[in-house]
Image 1: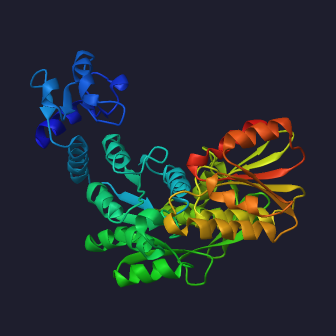
Image 2 (image 1 turned 180 degrees about the horizontal axis):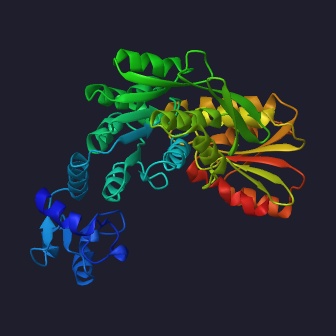
Image 3 (image 1 turned 180 degrees about the vertical axis):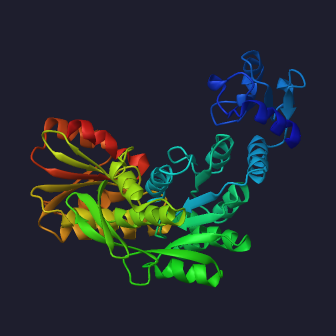
Length: 432
């Protein structure tokens, strides 16, 4: 069955899970969701030109062009894994608690200076996004970059079984998705499933020389590594200059020094840029090309973006949040030499029993400073109502916050917007 699917796939190199995106010769994978059943669209997909439909409900089998399987997702993953085994180009797997999408984009920008490079679109890094990324790989691609996310143990191992990376990069490990991982140790075990996969196939990992946890984990796996960072032991060395507000750093190449002015906010992006620099050097990308690639990269999707609205200066870092990313965002915000700073922070999700304690740490940090105000959004911060702090405001949700600031506009402020994706903190931009 996989051979038949693969032969059909090679004829068009198109698969889709959305019946609205049918193209002639494609394969339609019919998924079921809470509010829809893709099986019902199989006849329509065939009428619109799909070559095959993979379905799980036999009542929608129109003819032999419908392949009935017990698990549509598993079949898609098997097809992607089969395709991967036919390819001999380098595959780079990227995971981590924070910064993996930005790092993936930077690695893509750097490697594209020399190679035809294909990378995960957006943050489609899960059990569905990874196989779709593999099956969207252009026939002439020379390097593939696969972002891999996880919120439960075993997920990185499962994604490695599909993507089979030869090279890997873990940006960092932090306190995120604790509800699923159970503990910080669970986060480390899951993220380093990438290292164990690489060790089994004698691959290579790019490791931050300043991250003792990842260095130790790589050593325990007897894994070949390329180190990067600002330590004397790093094989690819660079040094952070600062962020006011954009991050600037320089790289060393013997007696030569290359100064790089990025369009990324925050010192925390130094590690992401150095990771991309290390990957680039390993794959023989020239230093000048690395410099130009990183300087020309513009962040999007509310990741490390800076916007001057005419009334306020906004730091949009509200794609997602966890205790680790919240800490470095606040570190950077506190270091900015600006007046009238306001930290607008949404609740952090999926922290389980650690949620109250982690949100209390943020509130304690805000109340311990007199150089900025705090605006807190979401039920996770509701306990601040019990406090009588004139520098803190709380809103149940982003709608309530938007309504308030529409009636009571801010001006002349530098504002950090950060929170878990579900809090939708980016919606505040229009009233700021």
